[in-house]
Length: 202
Image 1 (cartoon, rainbow, N blue to C red):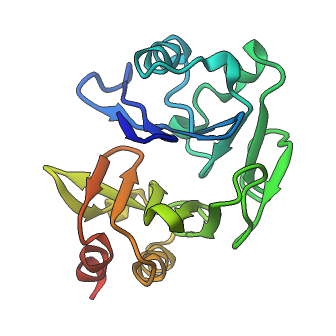
Image 2 (cartoon, rainbow, N blue to C red):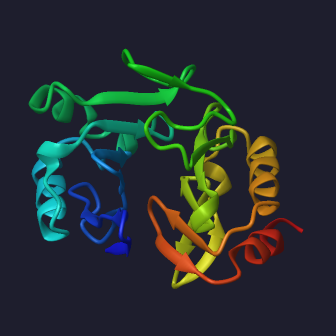
């Protein structure tokens, strides 16, 4: 799905749960291309097909950015960097199962993507991060938020490492100006998202 001229949301069918999807995000800035999260393990061909369906060439990929170390987010990262060895991996400096090339911290701006701000949103995992594109009023939420039946919702508390920290992270992003949110498992929702997030935690 083309969000705008430079942002695409992929829809990858899950081999683990056939009725479920993951939604990695592709962001382009000039001649640089970034993939946010990488589906479940073993789904590289599905990612390649999703790129092709959007008119994108995965051979032009420069970076993978991981929101956290969930196995369905790390997914195909090793396969991608094995197939495309020039791809560099970005992640929270404390939240990677393998060597990363670029370490990200709260309030960092992503290298080569000066409009993407890293927001520390712990709770689902201890070092979960989300991405905020202020000029687009877009939150790439990772597993911070879910969307079910076209409604914004919280993640199941049973899936969170620290539910108190998780709620504080949701409150944190509710203060941002957001009109579009992309949830890794739920897809995209547009509208008065900031107010919707506030309603979830107040």
